[in-house]
Amino acid sequence: ENFIKYQDINDELIILNLNLKKTSDIHQQEELKRKIANLEEQLSLLKEYKDLNFAQSLSAPDNIETLSKLTNPLAIIGAFSHIKKLKGEKEEYIFKFNDFKNLVDKIREKNSELKELVELKPSVENIEALKASDKKLEEFEQALNFASVSYSVYEKKIDEELSRVSAEIKIQSLRAVNILVAIVIVI
Image (cartoon, rainbow, N blue to C red; front, side, top):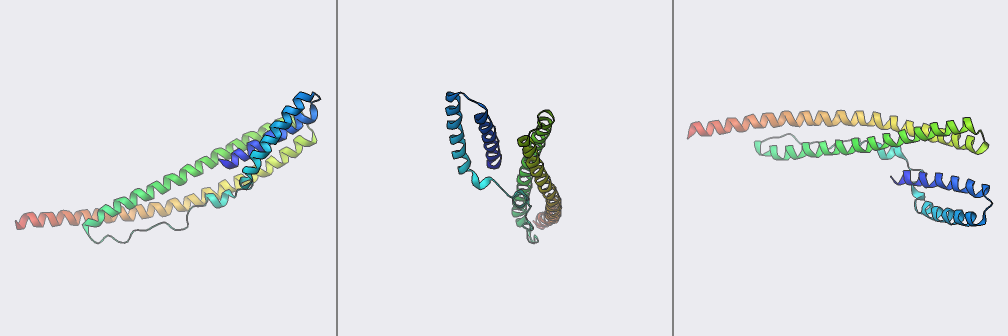
């Protein structure tokens, strides 16, 4: 979110600086200078988000928390909590991944708009902006591919753990039923 904000402010700054060079009206120049100063202040506050490493922030955990083998029917409660926690972590990662995917889509859209602009107005500034956008898009697509592969591995590990714990819950549930039946028969 902060990275997107940084990029939006930076883009707006570029546009305002271009407008400042084009205008000859003194009042409009002063207004643009005020806006530029304000945006530069905001940009300095967000500078740590300039080159955010998305591949690192989107990488799934290498290991997932595993539950020890269930040895008695009372451990079923903890097993259900474990399942709920794993599903929550999986959903959280999917949410982050989809957010990043939407960001890449926005960058693609911006890139195609820049391509159209270069076709209409092939100036040096527009061509440089397009090159920068192409580079950014390539980096983000690589990060998206990395995140996708990372998620596939992570999802497989979680699904295996969920299957194992569910099978153990089933075994302990049957054991609990057998104990209850034995108690009823004895009484």
